[in-house]
Length: 273
Image (cartoon, rainbow, N blue to C red; front, side, top):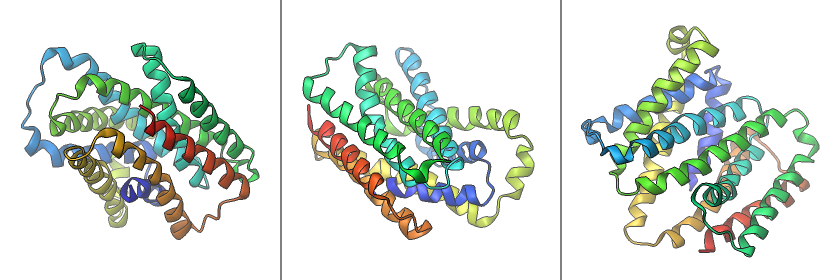
């Protein structure tokens, strides 16, 4: 959870070094792909997985990371972005109800409602007056992550390295094309990236995208999903602490109230079966 929480401050540092947001997302996915190629061995999954795999790869490999970087790029403060990512859980539950016909209990409805109330309270923080565009992209990031979790239900039997490698491939190629047409001068931008920025991008790919996820999959061998998932509520706490350490962001009263409501709501959403 420390690794997951650190992803946001580290990405913001790279963006502050003039790395274009969409290109940075593409390079992150490209590094993930390169590292996983020896484990993937270019195995092609069965055709029955193709549709869900494409949807998952696009949601997770393209939308999640591009909206994450755009939200950080358009925000001067990043703690609200970290909290906004917690909406992925309510969005995922709502998407499961709409797309898979799953029932949402009354307790879950209350917790989903309270999570959005917490975000609404944070919206009234005067410090966010010039950061609404970043929060909008953060909401899209959370929605994309929630959709990705729904699509992943049909891919649980696939090998993890194969799944992540395909996500890396799709994310790298599509984001690179988008960066070329929107941000322009792609080759020049890549050449201009300094060593420190490459370290930050490498950290996101190796420590966050691979290391943190592999550690979670390792825990799944010994513990149930119900026992592990509540710990996801910790990563915004670590992320906010790191934001203070790196950027000296001091939370306001409104942010603390809204943040406590959001994290508590998401924690209990994880706990309810």
